[in-house]
Image (tube, rainbow, N blue to C red; front, top):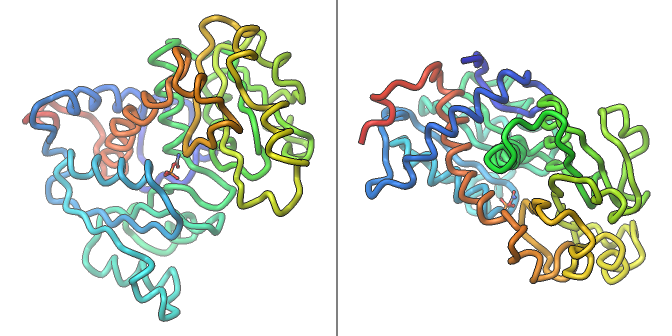
Length: 315
Ligand code: CP
């Protein structure tokens, strides 16, 4: 088992072996959520703080459930009613929390690099739950876990990532992770949403969705971040949906078994029509289910779990 890291900051900083360690550990934890009593002692005596400075449904709920299923003690900070509203800095907030002998801080923050800044300044483990436009490593890990469950070894598999590549932390983490595991990655979107020189990350670029998907094993449809519409990066949602959204008609021309993914939340009728989001190729809710085992694995590993013994998984 390859893991000696205190923190999970991004997939840029993990080796292929470390990524596979998380995914294999997650597979061992996945069975816990099928039990009638969904709890194991792997994090008994450890304390985790969930500190979300940005909105979240899936990431926040699944981290909290993962912590509870591992028997950790948890604190959910409500940033809106915390002393952040009185001007307390991020580092002061986290240093004060760490004074309670906290083992892990799970943080989502609008500022790219916030988790790395904290990791360098506190002894507790820092887990990045999404930082600005930088990385969302646990999302990419659960995406890769889901793909491996469907496809097995990802070497040579083609995965298209579609949408706002320039502003997407999900895209960046998936690109780092998938290329390290040997997948072929194509990014697809309007030129205004694809960064210059993205090829240097080892991906291909396409501006034509149907051409890019004709030999793809999977497609990850990113959320169009409506908060960025004001930047006029594309003419209208209607035109975006026509060119880069997936509808039943477009699906008819794609490989029959293509796997359709989305990190959520979905803008129905923009990235995906309802018939595709809820259709037979969609694994979107499986991604959500798998997120639990993946986040359990991450929490176990950053708190020093080196190998999973039967007692970690005992009821
Ligand atoms: N995929 C994802 O990060 O969703 P949330 O913003 O709801 O956590």
